Length: 224
Image 1: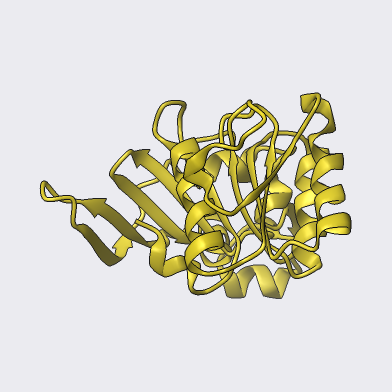
Image 2: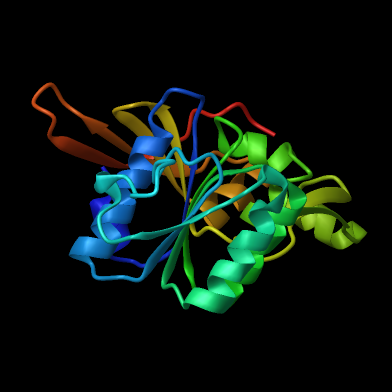
């Protein structure tokens, strides 16, 4: 479902409700990146769901390393420790949920490390509206336009704009286990903030489990 995106070596954020398969996807991506693409992969494993909680890591993560987190509140510190002490090319982290973790993600991305992560929320709009996590998609700020600029844009004088580059160039909404909506994050965020409909990729499996990708489909989100 996502193998082609890994070739870009750009960070990917997954959203989806509990039970839709995010952890299974994290585990498989760890294996592919480590064993097939020969990357140095570190899993920051807070709940031990990805790499297992025993002394021997889960076999499905392949050659990826794991760093177990003693307390959930320390996840952001272990993320930074992983970068500073283990020279990874890829860091995988499940359930990004605090401002400290979002800032750690930005710090990691700025060092040129690829991130694969999941966050609380089901749609891109959930992240845009979440003040704690919006930094993952570049952050949102209110900008006041001059009269001429507002008229040229045919908009109000106070508008919402993205503050900075997105930490995650790709964002995937896992609607169902075999039905994903893929965003180019910055493009989709900008269009949603301007009241426009972004175009996305729909990724799904058919009855024979073949992956089908439909490009340039209008997004059916909730709106900002």
